Image (cartoon, rainbow over all chains, first blue to last red; front, side, top):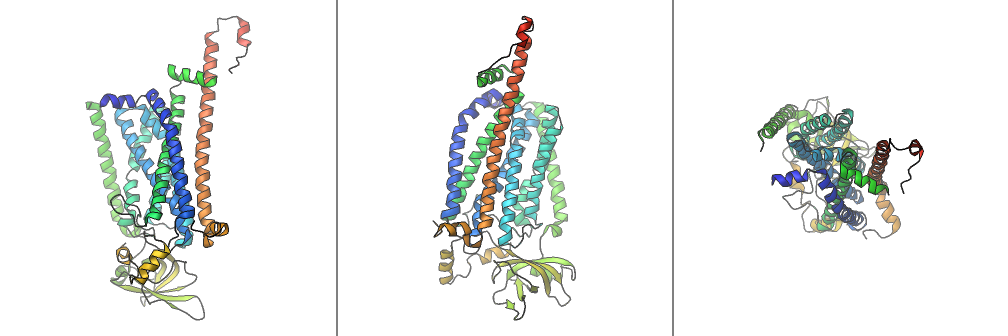
Length: 247
Length: 153
Length: 75
């Protein structure tokens, strides 16, 4: 098991696997995402209470979901960085932090635009919205800290510690709507229960969540490959690869 | 596992536990500030200060909405099905405002115990359904199948 | 379709602007992320190629002086 673990830590091995996975991830991800969004936008029935404004859910929920998942993945990678000093783990963090920040921004932005017609306000300092804003700042912190320290190993460790300290925010985001009074409603999608919407609404939502996940997988692979090319410049296989790309 | 790695992992677990406990205690101590609004039971029990800008939240009581003839003033009661608070508000209400719907009102509690609101926000629940389903449920005599479960939120 | 006409689809009973702004920003930002990642990949590759060429010309320093002025055309 440990040999497989260490093999997975090899940038060269990852570069190859990622290259083989990426076309599938991109095709499937975009396909599901487009299907889910078109279905949600044009074919799903409107909501009895909110009318058509609820259609924002088909991008709001996937963005918010991914924003939190990406952070959790980064936290796992941070543990691997600190304990096993694996290059690939830090590479992952560096590659996906900006993606996570954009997804968090999208969740906040679509939430604000949705809040205006339904709640009557763009923003309110309730526990859910505030903790989500903190998540955005944690992403910014990871990006800025990573680029501020020039020594690769020191920067990887500093970022990993920051991410791990911030990981307490994730359960706070998730349970904020249950622990405290908030304007934000509780989750519609739960892992353990039936969703509180009919299938003609939750199926397109599920499709867009899955699609965005796969699309993120593609982008993460692509960006990690780029980071590998940059950092492993001195290795022979990267030299050969660069030379081959140039011709 | 290598003893050095085991040591690092232990340090990380301690770090996480420490941060978790610190944040947990802080949020527990600040829970009244983190709560967005007081519910009617808290207001009835005298927990909410009078003449201070606060928020009150709950359901708009069925049959309690009275609109003034000459201006945009509305009177209604906000309930959590245990206690209720009279609310007075002048202005445009959000589209989702209706009897049986959730609201969060921003304003002050006056000395007579009426909540004078400056702003009324609509709070909806996590349930979505097509209008036909909602109509069918209403026809079947179920006013709002989810009302009971959302009151406590 | 949940809508009777194209205009109904666009206006969405008054909520059109909210919904469409969200979808447009979503598509725009995801596209921007992909394009930005692509330009970064190209920049990294360009830089690596430049360094590689620099190194290779460096190892041939013992070669006749004229060779250092000859340009390399990768194609």
